[in-house]
Amino acid sequence: MLKVPNHQVAGHQAGDGKLGPLVDDSGLFYKPLQSDDRGSKEVLFYTSFSSNTNIPNHIRRFFPTFHGTQLIEASNGSGKQPHLVLQDIFSGRFNPSIMDIKIGSRTWYPQASEDYIQKCFMKDTKRSSLALGFRIDGLQIYESEGSGFWKPDRKLIHKFTAEDVRLVLRQFVSSNSSAGVDPDCTFASTVYGGSSGILAQLLELKEWFEHQTIFHFYSCSVLMVFEKESVVKEMSSGAEVKLVDFAHVVEGKGIIDHNFLGGLCSLIKFISEILTCSDVHTAKASLQL
Image 1 (tube, one colour):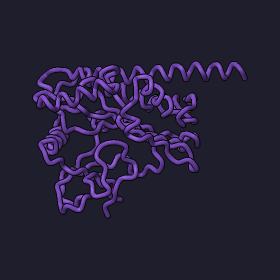
Image 2 (cartoon, rainbow, N blue to C red):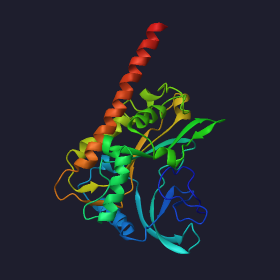
Image 3 (spheres, one colour):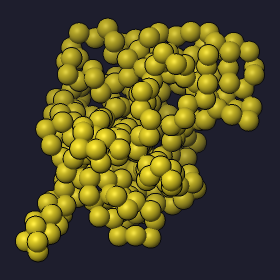
Image 4 (cartoon, helix red, strand yellow):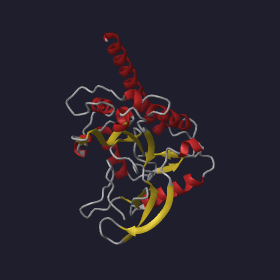
């Protein structure tokens, strides 16, 4: 039984006769192949990545598991179409807080058409990509059972300035995540910090990107996810980092992917600063008790 994903925050979404991804109850995610060469390129990437023996096992966990391709009924009612079959990252998660962060100050790939380059350049300039090396592309933050999710409209997200991005990264790990309130970063040490937190995972990825020259990842996103209810119950936050969207990956040809690495380092810097501020705030609070 295929259905529209509950927790998609970016990309093409199914519904109202539109073509988009579907999920099933067994933990699989079905992504329709784009009609141009982007679809075939993404299949080629997953096939190459899955069979490449030079990819360390500890790095593979940051990528959705690839289960090949399959012809299934498309979400827009157009009949059977080829779909990538991937791991459903959010399967088994009930109220995940999710942030989709597109990495790189430049999102167009080599050999792209002049029109496509200009289109990407305008987006990268207007949003925070050029200034920060990354931008927020999608977002949902779970607040409470009564309030549900704070999921800002895409038009609002597209207007995020560099300062807005800094604020939202703090809101993501706060108990008071609503707009207009100074974020308290209550969950920063649990979600961003620790040996298995988001920062540790990003640093693990960074170490690989400092050496890997197999691929260059253009217009690829880092997904950050955790579950607030688990943190509140003093359990594991389930914090996880995944890389998604590989339609514009090209061969590295022995050269380090400085575009992706630079954006990743910038994101790490922002999160590290939030953790430092959070530690100072906690220390001050302890002194006042």
